[in-house]
Length: 419
Image (tube, rainbow, N blue to C red; front, side):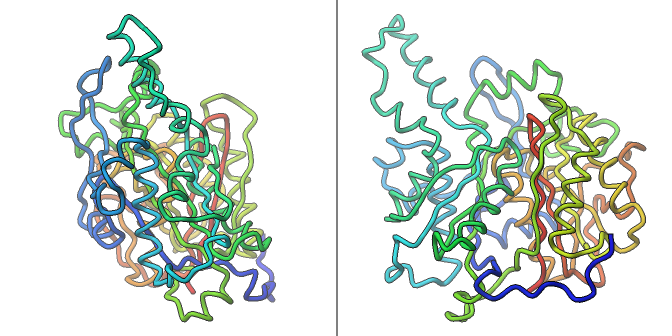
């Protein structure tokens, strides 16, 4: 592919920029502490125990729930909703928007999720088991807790947003999908401010641990910090984690009008489907998705400075993605490749969102954070430009490409450029 020598110039009201970031991750509760953890090699994985499965490992967030919610609100709602409220409020605060005087009917909330409702249903069944399964003890809060729009709805309720809100179910591609949806709605004029990306409460459902364990895909290690090890020969699977990251997205014309700080601009994106298998990825379709995003951004592979991989730490998944990346970036001498799950585990619906956030400050410091825990690189994952174990200073960072893939063969790619 050859990039257009005269790239298409979009009008400012069609250019979408990131102006605020709110997040909670297992190793940081704001962008700067999170980034610091990634540059210093600090894992957020710790011992964890959950009913029926027992002792395992997980990425656990420790944000201040009471910062934006009363006890009653937390008790009535869900963990995913609480994570979303924290991230949404933090993103708006970070953006510098005059929230009090913002027309809330022109704000949209678009939240990517892998799944929702399992935690609440498991909890209710566990509780009524103690009452011989008498359903009179079933909580009347169950329905609003488990409807698919819950996380986005809880954010809207908490923040007084009366524009459109919904969740985007896109498996582990949901983070990118939420950002893409927010951008599309801004371009369509359906909102003037989008609070968008992904959240996850996955560690609170025993089912996800049990399922990965039954597949032989649940990571184990005597040192929790070394359990998540994408690309390593001794990787043993996925570390399940919770977390969230939401962005404030605006049209460039609006961001300029209020002299907003800008983290980056959306250059291109793509989504496609493998249509191959329930679980196993298809590297040909993944490469196709990457190439579609490059084409829409009018870029060549060598224009990309950092590729943030999806790699989860499973034996087949990592190798398949590396096959896809080699086919696109194999001849790119100045493209660097990293992975964030090695620090925080797999935050499911929030994965793409947090992984992008972990790289965005590279526009400023020109440092590519590493993939940690790569003691013996799997030959099948030996790709040019892979940054392992230590952060690397690089000469320029103008474009970051973020991969995020999920079960049932859903693939998503987002490209952000320096503004």
